Length: 332
Image (cartoon, rainbow, N blue to C red):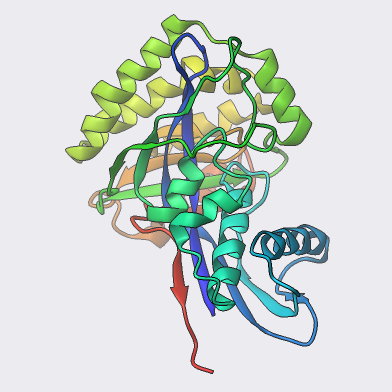
Protein backbone atom coordinates (compact mmCIF):
# COMPACT_ATOMS: atom_id res chain seq x y z
CA UNK A 1 0.00 0.00 0.00
CA UNK A 2 1.14 3.54 -0.75
CA UNK A 3 0.26 7.02 0.43
CA UNK A 4 1.14 10.32 -1.24
CA UNK A 5 0.76 13.67 0.51
CA UNK A 6 1.41 17.27 -0.64
CA UNK A 7 3.82 19.76 0.87
CA UNK A 8 2.35 23.02 2.02
CA UNK A 9 3.26 26.69 1.77
CA UNK A 10 2.65 28.57 5.02
CA UNK A 11 2.05 32.21 4.15
CA UNK A 12 1.47 33.73 7.58
CA UNK A 13 0.24 33.52 11.16
CA UNK A 14 -2.54 36.06 11.49
CA UNK A 15 -2.97 37.19 15.10
CA UNK A 16 0.05 37.10 17.39
CA UNK A 17 -1.28 39.83 19.67
CA UNK A 18 -3.47 37.87 22.07
CA UNK A 19 -5.82 40.82 22.44
CA UNK A 20 -8.97 38.88 21.57
CA UNK A 21 -10.20 35.42 22.58
CA UNK A 22 -8.04 33.57 20.02
CA UNK A 23 -4.40 33.48 18.92
CA UNK A 24 -2.46 32.38 15.86
CA UNK A 25 -4.79 31.72 12.93
CA UNK A 26 -3.00 30.92 9.70
CA UNK A 27 -3.14 31.07 5.94
CA UNK A 28 -1.46 28.83 3.37
CA UNK A 29 -1.99 26.29 0.61
CA UNK A 30 -0.98 22.81 -0.53
CA UNK A 31 1.36 22.24 -3.49
CA UNK A 32 1.76 19.24 -5.79
CA UNK A 33 5.54 19.01 -5.44
CA UNK A 34 7.54 18.15 -3.46
CA UNK A 35 5.55 15.28 -1.95
CA UNK A 36 5.86 12.66 0.76
CA UNK A 37 5.25 9.35 -1.05
CA UNK A 38 5.57 6.15 0.98
CA UNK A 39 5.07 2.44 0.28
CA UNK A 40 4.62 -0.16 3.01
CA UNK A 41 4.63 -3.95 3.00
CA UNK A 42 4.87 -6.74 5.57
CA UNK A 43 8.37 -7.94 6.46
CA UNK A 44 10.19 -10.11 8.99
CA UNK A 45 11.74 -7.01 10.58
CA UNK A 46 11.59 -3.24 10.26
CA UNK A 47 13.38 -2.04 7.15
CA UNK A 48 13.49 1.53 5.84
CA UNK A 49 14.74 2.01 2.30
CA UNK A 50 14.99 4.85 -0.20
CA UNK A 51 16.25 7.49 2.22
CA UNK A 52 19.61 8.89 3.22
CA UNK A 53 21.23 7.10 6.20
CA UNK A 54 21.19 10.22 8.37
CA UNK A 55 17.37 10.31 8.11
CA UNK A 56 16.84 6.72 9.27
CA UNK A 57 16.73 7.49 12.99
CA UNK A 58 14.13 10.23 12.48
CA UNK A 59 11.87 8.08 10.32
CA UNK A 60 12.19 5.07 12.62
CA UNK A 61 11.23 7.28 15.56
CA UNK A 62 8.16 8.62 13.71
CA UNK A 63 7.11 5.14 12.58
CA UNK A 64 7.44 3.73 16.09
CA UNK A 65 5.47 6.69 17.46
CA UNK A 66 2.67 6.04 14.94
CA UNK A 67 2.65 2.33 15.78
CA UNK A 68 2.39 3.06 19.52
CA UNK A 69 -0.46 5.54 19.03
CA UNK A 70 -2.34 2.95 16.97
CA UNK A 71 -1.58 0.25 19.58
CA UNK A 72 0.20 -2.01 17.09
CA UNK A 73 2.07 -4.92 18.62
CA UNK A 74 5.09 -4.86 16.32
CA UNK A 75 6.74 -2.80 13.60
CA UNK A 76 7.74 -5.55 11.18
CA UNK A 77 7.32 -3.54 8.01
CA UNK A 78 9.28 -2.64 4.93
CA UNK A 79 8.85 1.11 4.48
CA UNK A 80 10.03 2.48 1.15
CA UNK A 81 10.39 6.24 0.71
CA UNK A 82 9.56 6.98 -2.93
CA UNK A 83 9.86 10.73 -2.45
CA UNK A 84 10.09 13.08 0.51
CA UNK A 85 9.69 16.73 1.46
CA UNK A 86 12.91 18.46 2.59
CA UNK A 87 13.09 18.86 6.35
CA UNK A 88 13.55 22.22 8.10
CA UNK A 89 12.78 24.06 4.87
CA UNK A 90 9.41 25.60 5.75
CA UNK A 91 7.36 23.10 3.72
CA UNK A 92 5.69 21.24 6.58
CA UNK A 93 7.59 17.96 6.19
CA UNK A 94 7.22 16.97 9.86
CA UNK A 95 3.43 17.20 9.74
CA UNK A 96 3.18 15.25 6.49
CA UNK A 97 5.53 12.53 7.74
CA UNK A 98 3.65 12.04 10.98
CA UNK A 99 0.17 12.10 9.48
CA UNK A 100 1.18 9.96 6.49
CA UNK A 101 2.63 7.24 8.73
CA UNK A 102 -0.42 7.26 11.01
CA UNK A 103 -2.79 7.01 8.05
CA UNK A 104 -0.71 4.43 6.19
CA UNK A 105 -0.18 2.14 9.19
CA UNK A 106 -3.81 2.51 10.18
CA UNK A 107 -5.05 1.53 6.74
CA UNK A 108 -2.48 -1.23 6.22
CA UNK A 109 -3.18 -2.82 9.62
CA UNK A 110 -6.94 -2.42 9.29
CA UNK A 111 -7.22 -0.05 12.24
CA UNK A 112 -10.02 1.84 10.48
CA UNK A 113 -8.34 5.20 11.03
CA UNK A 114 -9.84 7.81 8.75
CA UNK A 115 -7.57 10.44 7.23
CA UNK A 116 -9.64 13.02 9.10
CA UNK A 117 -8.85 11.33 12.43
CA UNK A 118 -5.08 11.28 12.11
CA UNK A 119 -4.58 14.72 13.69
CA UNK A 120 -5.89 13.61 17.10
CA UNK A 121 -3.24 10.88 17.21
CA UNK A 122 -0.46 13.30 16.29
CA UNK A 123 1.50 16.15 17.85
CA UNK A 124 0.66 18.45 14.95
CA UNK A 125 -1.81 21.26 14.34
CA UNK A 126 -1.41 22.84 17.77
CA UNK A 127 -0.30 26.25 16.50
CA UNK A 128 -1.21 26.30 12.82
CA UNK A 129 -3.75 24.07 11.09
CA UNK A 130 -2.42 24.58 7.56
CA UNK A 131 -0.37 21.37 7.43
CA UNK A 132 -3.15 19.19 8.83
CA UNK A 133 -5.86 20.72 6.67
CA UNK A 134 -3.60 20.43 3.62
CA UNK A 135 -3.19 16.74 4.43
CA UNK A 136 -6.96 16.35 4.73
CA UNK A 137 -8.18 18.29 1.71
CA UNK A 138 -5.52 20.38 -0.06
CA UNK A 139 -6.45 23.75 -1.54
CA UNK A 140 -5.99 27.30 -0.24
CA UNK A 141 -6.79 27.43 3.48
CA UNK A 142 -7.44 29.89 6.30
CA UNK A 143 -7.86 28.56 9.84
CA UNK A 144 -9.22 30.25 12.94
CA UNK A 145 -6.41 29.64 15.42
CA UNK A 146 -6.89 28.50 19.02
CA UNK A 147 -8.93 29.76 21.93
CA UNK A 148 -6.97 31.52 24.65
CA UNK A 149 -7.33 29.45 27.81
CA UNK A 150 -5.14 31.53 30.18
CA UNK A 151 -4.95 35.17 31.22
CA UNK A 152 -1.59 35.52 29.47
CA UNK A 153 -1.52 33.63 26.15
CA UNK A 154 1.58 31.57 25.44
CA UNK A 155 2.84 31.76 21.86
CA UNK A 156 4.56 28.44 21.08
CA UNK A 157 5.33 26.25 18.07
CA UNK A 158 3.21 23.11 17.72
CA UNK A 159 5.91 20.86 19.18
CA UNK A 160 5.80 22.86 22.45
CA UNK A 161 2.13 23.83 22.56
CA UNK A 162 -0.39 22.07 24.77
CA UNK A 163 -2.70 19.54 23.10
CA UNK A 164 -6.03 20.95 22.04
CA UNK A 165 -8.56 21.10 19.26
CA UNK A 166 -7.36 21.47 15.70
CA UNK A 167 -7.69 25.11 14.56
CA UNK A 168 -11.05 25.26 12.75
CA UNK A 169 -11.12 25.51 8.99
CA UNK A 170 -12.66 28.90 8.17
CA UNK A 171 -12.07 29.05 4.43
CA UNK A 172 -11.02 26.60 1.74
CA UNK A 173 -10.84 27.36 -1.95
CA UNK A 174 -9.52 25.37 -4.89
CA UNK A 175 -6.28 26.79 -6.21
CA UNK A 176 -6.85 28.24 -9.73
CA UNK A 177 -5.62 25.85 -12.42
CA UNK A 178 -4.12 28.70 -14.47
CA UNK A 179 -1.81 29.82 -11.67
CA UNK A 180 1.63 28.26 -11.48
CA UNK A 181 3.72 28.16 -8.31
CA UNK A 182 7.48 28.56 -8.08
CA UNK A 183 9.19 27.07 -5.01
CA UNK A 184 12.87 27.75 -4.39
CA UNK A 185 14.78 26.11 -1.52
CA UNK A 186 18.12 27.97 -1.32
CA UNK A 187 21.30 26.34 -0.13
CA UNK A 188 23.06 27.76 2.91
CA UNK A 189 19.93 28.74 4.81
CA UNK A 190 17.82 26.90 7.35
CA UNK A 191 14.42 27.42 8.91
CA UNK A 192 13.81 27.64 12.64
CA UNK A 193 12.82 24.57 14.63
CA UNK A 194 12.97 23.26 18.19
CA UNK A 195 14.30 25.60 20.86
CA UNK A 196 15.38 28.20 18.28
CA UNK A 197 11.82 28.53 17.00
CA UNK A 198 10.34 28.65 20.49
CA UNK A 199 12.80 31.34 21.56
CA UNK A 200 12.09 33.41 18.44
CA UNK A 201 8.36 33.18 19.04
CA UNK A 202 8.66 34.18 22.68
CA UNK A 203 10.97 37.12 21.90
CA UNK A 204 8.77 38.51 19.12
CA UNK A 205 5.33 38.35 20.70
CA UNK A 206 2.93 39.85 21.37
CA UNK A 207 2.61 41.92 18.19
CA UNK A 208 0.79 45.25 18.23
CA UNK A 209 -2.91 44.88 17.48
CA UNK A 210 -2.61 47.63 14.84
CA UNK A 211 -0.34 45.40 12.78
CA UNK A 212 -2.67 42.44 13.23
CA UNK A 213 -5.51 44.61 11.94
CA UNK A 214 -3.54 45.33 8.78
CA UNK A 215 -2.92 41.62 8.24
CA UNK A 216 -6.59 40.79 8.76
CA UNK A 217 -7.68 43.59 6.44
CA UNK A 218 -5.40 42.42 3.63
CA UNK A 219 -6.41 38.78 4.10
CA UNK A 220 -10.17 39.34 4.26
CA UNK A 221 -10.53 42.11 1.70
CA UNK A 222 -7.80 41.23 -0.77
CA UNK A 223 -6.31 37.73 -0.54
CA UNK A 224 -9.52 35.72 -0.12
CA UNK A 225 -11.66 37.59 -2.66
CA UNK A 226 -8.78 37.51 -5.17
CA UNK A 227 -8.44 33.73 -5.09
CA UNK A 228 -12.22 33.27 -5.34
CA UNK A 229 -12.26 35.52 -8.40
CA UNK A 230 -9.00 34.09 -9.81
CA UNK A 231 -7.53 37.61 -9.73
CA UNK A 232 -3.80 36.88 -9.81
CA UNK A 233 -2.77 40.55 -9.69
CA UNK A 234 -4.80 41.24 -6.56
CA UNK A 235 -3.70 37.99 -4.95
CA UNK A 236 0.01 38.62 -5.50
CA UNK A 237 -0.27 42.20 -4.26
CA UNK A 238 -1.84 40.92 -1.06
CA UNK A 239 0.87 38.29 -0.53
CA UNK A 240 3.51 41.01 -0.89
CA UNK A 241 1.65 43.09 1.67
CA UNK A 242 1.49 40.18 4.10
CA UNK A 243 5.29 39.88 3.98
CA UNK A 244 5.72 43.48 5.09
CA UNK A 245 3.70 43.65 8.31
CA UNK A 246 2.93 41.54 11.36
CA UNK A 247 4.42 38.13 12.06
CA UNK A 248 6.03 37.53 8.68
CA UNK A 249 7.83 40.88 8.82
CA UNK A 250 9.55 39.64 12.00
CA UNK A 251 11.00 36.70 10.08
CA UNK A 252 12.22 38.87 7.21
CA UNK A 253 14.11 40.94 9.82
CA UNK A 254 16.10 37.90 11.02
CA UNK A 255 19.84 38.35 10.48
CA UNK A 256 20.26 34.73 9.34
CA UNK A 257 17.89 35.38 6.42
CA UNK A 258 19.45 38.66 5.31
CA UNK A 259 20.72 37.19 2.04
CA UNK A 260 17.25 35.94 1.08
CA UNK A 261 16.03 39.45 0.34
CA UNK A 262 18.39 39.56 -2.64
CA UNK A 263 17.10 36.17 -3.83
CA UNK A 264 13.47 37.30 -3.49
CA UNK A 265 14.24 40.48 -5.44
CA UNK A 266 15.86 38.39 -8.17
CA UNK A 267 12.77 36.17 -8.49
CA UNK A 268 10.63 39.29 -8.81
CA UNK A 269 12.87 40.67 -11.57
CA UNK A 270 12.52 37.36 -13.38
CA UNK A 271 8.74 37.74 -13.52
CA UNK A 272 7.65 35.79 -10.43
CA UNK A 273 5.02 37.67 -8.46
CA UNK A 274 3.90 37.71 -4.83
CA UNK A 275 7.23 36.33 -3.65
CA UNK A 276 7.11 35.28 -0.02
CA UNK A 277 8.77 33.26 2.72
CA UNK A 278 7.11 29.98 3.68
CA UNK A 279 6.78 29.47 7.44
CA UNK A 280 10.15 30.18 9.12
CA UNK A 281 12.00 29.68 5.83
CA UNK A 282 14.18 29.34 4.02
CA UNK A 283 11.85 28.30 1.17
CA UNK A 284 10.69 31.13 -1.08
CA UNK A 285 7.51 30.89 -3.13
CA UNK A 286 5.85 32.97 -5.83
CA UNK A 287 3.33 32.82 -8.65
CA UNK A 288 2.99 33.21 -12.39
CA UNK A 289 0.25 32.96 -15.01
CA UNK A 290 0.49 29.77 -17.07
CA UNK A 291 -1.06 31.50 -20.08
CA UNK A 292 1.88 33.89 -20.23
CA UNK A 293 4.48 31.20 -19.50
CA UNK A 294 3.05 27.93 -20.85
CA UNK A 295 6.33 26.03 -21.21
CA UNK A 296 7.50 24.86 -17.80
CA UNK A 297 10.99 23.76 -18.86
CA UNK A 298 11.70 27.10 -20.54
CA UNK A 299 10.69 28.86 -17.34
CA UNK A 300 12.88 26.53 -15.30
CA UNK A 301 15.91 27.29 -17.45
CA UNK A 302 15.23 31.02 -17.26
CA UNK A 303 14.93 30.96 -13.47
CA UNK A 304 17.98 28.78 -12.89
CA UNK A 305 20.09 31.01 -15.12
CA UNK A 306 18.80 34.17 -13.47
CA UNK A 307 19.24 32.89 -9.93
CA UNK A 308 22.73 31.52 -10.51
CA UNK A 309 24.33 34.88 -9.73
CA UNK A 310 22.69 35.19 -6.29
CA UNK A 311 21.97 31.68 -4.96
CA UNK A 312 22.04 27.97 -5.59
CA UNK A 313 19.25 25.67 -4.52
CA UNK A 314 16.43 23.31 -5.40
CA UNK A 315 13.83 24.77 -7.76
CA UNK A 316 10.31 23.39 -8.20
CA UNK A 317 7.83 24.70 -10.74
CA UNK A 318 4.58 23.22 -9.59
CA UNK A 319 0.85 23.73 -9.05
CA UNK A 320 -1.47 24.20 -6.13
CA UNK A 321 -2.74 20.83 -4.85
CA UNK A 322 -6.52 20.68 -4.58
CA UNK A 323 -6.66 17.31 -2.85
CA UNK A 324 -4.97 16.01 0.25
CA UNK A 325 -3.46 12.61 0.99
CA UNK A 326 -4.37 9.76 -1.31
CA UNK A 327 -3.87 6.00 -0.99
CA UNK A 328 -2.82 3.49 -3.62
CA UNK A 329 -3.60 -0.13 -2.77
CA UNK A 330 -1.76 -3.03 -4.42
CA UNK A 331 -3.23 -6.49 -4.87
CA UNK A 332 -1.54 -9.20 -2.77
